Length: 384
Image (cartoon, rainbow, N blue to C red):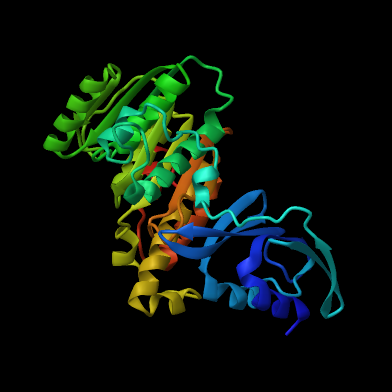
């Protein structure tokens, strides 16, 4: 055990912040920052891990932190700075151990345990956002309901991902279709973001199969005065939909192949932006057969199910790329909050290249399954 593990074990209750930098070849991430936080009354260590200009979050219980550090960080970073309440300790990797330099903090530092409430969210606590009150995320005086804090974070995470794409959007008008909108809390939030915060002429249509849900959403939209936010009972797999220019398609938890029909509609309409969080991906799992090097992943039911879902999203991303989109596959929210945490964020940036469809088609042929988006795109143009 290196000297840094001993120090961390002895001083774990005094840690205010830690920064791990200058990775060795064995390190998985280029930089890691650590801070203690309180989550639902329990002390955790919150990690931000940086790689390829992306940030990956992980929350560890206190007793998990030292074992994690020993396995994932010890001897993998040349520089480690630990800020404690009364001192700062700088470790520099030399061979198989760390040299140590200690400096006293002139002012005693307190451990900030307020979790993410200090983060500058786009949708701020105290802001008059009627949809968040209606959803029970905000109280009537626009304070966050403690039990809904995770939902508040998820909503802001989604808006942050949208804002990344639209913060420099210079058009005054935007048209958005939302497929499988359900109770539509994110649809209302999208309308608020574009129409109120951005001041744009915003038109959003939300589609869902449930008549009672659609009727209720239209009543709420009318209540808020959201004149250009409409909800329609429709089946994306067979009904005629909005047929004018569309800037953005949203599919959040559209079930199974409904996601594929929505993505195909977006492709056919040349929608510039796509935000898709797939759900209930049964199609490939029901069909896939053993056929090659991947057979070991199909042996056990739960692994087969997860592999099939990842395979489905990989094919979807590749098809989007073939149809001229640049695709980011993003961790939408922490896995601990929802296993449906992959978002496909796509932007139309280039020409169609159907040759890219050959790779997913080879997988389909080899493992005896069909994937709906791939089939729909093939039908719309020349075969692979």
